[in-house]
Image 1: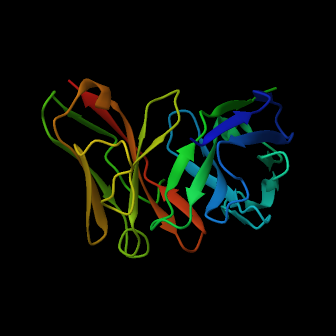
Image 2: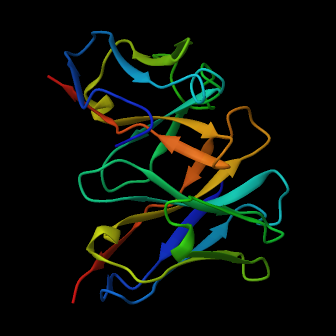
Image 3: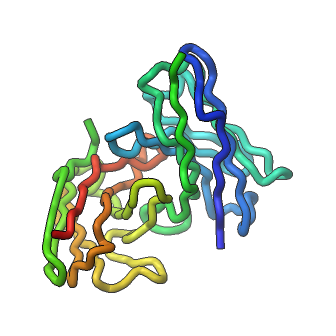
Length: 122
Length: 110
């Protein structure tokens, strides 16, 4: 059973960089069948895809966030990470890490973490 | 403003059948399989339907998905109290190389 667990600081100051890490267990982060993704949900709003990374380091980012986002992966430590720079209050959200199945039609996100609430406030 | 449009709320009584719609365009729903997620606040979202009509192992057959043109639907039959959750439709966007989501529908079991 795949498990994903986010870890983040909880509170970030405006203009600073938000960092969250996702640890993957129960599956190989090196699998060629999956991308590893970050998805967020602002309070009271819907889900927004931030970006995804392949085990090789290939990344895809949401164009609306691309200038501020960096996603990296460390397969030896079985984790991948999100950095979002120059944050504002609108970046306050629950940040989910997730697994995208790229060998299944429709590329469903088949496993999600519990989510990490990150609040931007001074 | 979400790329995919869902009604913000839906409701039904136990045992009833309810349907949740998801409206898109030729560039998303019209050309790609649709996925549905169930989300109880405070928990991890759960994949409910993938490839428009397929259920992952463990998802009851009370849940079914369909699509016609640029609209998709999730149907829940034999409604139960623990079906009360938020439901999201999603499609893979080829131009983004990532998923886009609907705004979500909050299902209330009366």
